[in-house]
Length: 412
Image: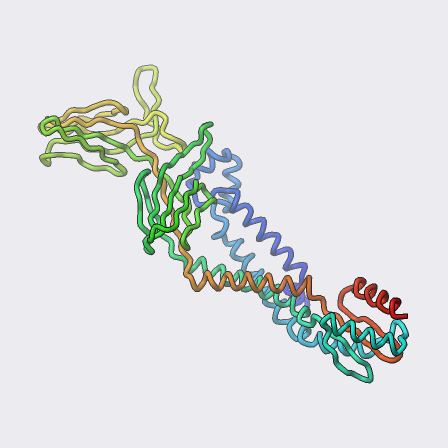
């Protein structure tokens, strides 16, 4: 049992877990998450997509093995923190004991001893008396550096999980040119959206403009998958996408004209009987040698040859029609003109509770302080007695030794 406990709290096991967590996190950053299987086939190829889906790399952070790794890392950090705290608390007393008992490294004259004590006091060393020797101590809080590093890692994991579980998440479908208002009054406008870049490579990107509730702050950013926009405590992610049909409805009788966007089947009618029933929009088609048309039902890219699948209802007759952008159907006195489809983004809007966000910042501040203690506050004790002086520290104090030797030579 002791061997098992020792393994789980060992530095080697903790480093192994950290490496595995970093590898999984890197995969989650490089591979687009939570998309349809066909999207991975189009992006990475058939063979690579099989590996991605089989290993759960399409949703790494919810995968069972990632959760197990995080739990094991929490256990490791907890054991490292708890089991090493008693030894950390005794480290200062042990340093004093070593400094009081270690043989002097160099004999001192009365004048040298006085100069040495004065120099150490100027350097901020605290003076104590022990067993007939004068001890000068500095940076004893540095003993807590390693403990606080382990503790801050653990708290980052705990608070990070709390941030994920308590985050307010909403999904919004926004057409290009439209604006949505968030709970705190922030207005977000989708200036444009694209599925492919200029070279035809898949590049789901939304150009967003966010304006604060009071209008004093504004920011714009091209948001891509895994490249969110941060504004006023919110994070805006490019989550999904879609393509909607567009029709222009003209009524010559009164000279009116309007454009409607169609994201789902609907019946466009004036009298409740005659009109146009929109069924679906297909991304393309293949025309056979005999002139027949086979519709393409899915694609992860832009709609290159869109086809409208509609029904024309007039005088009790229903006629199925496959129409292309630019074509017009006239039903009664109303004309329906098929326009080019419009692609639109689905945004994921995430907001972390201010208290949790504050706790996360506090934990990062604790880690910075812990790293400072580890690297810049190395504990040291200098023992001074009539027989000489000695330096004790858990790390090499070459600089301090050279400094004291130079001081004593100058005082000789």
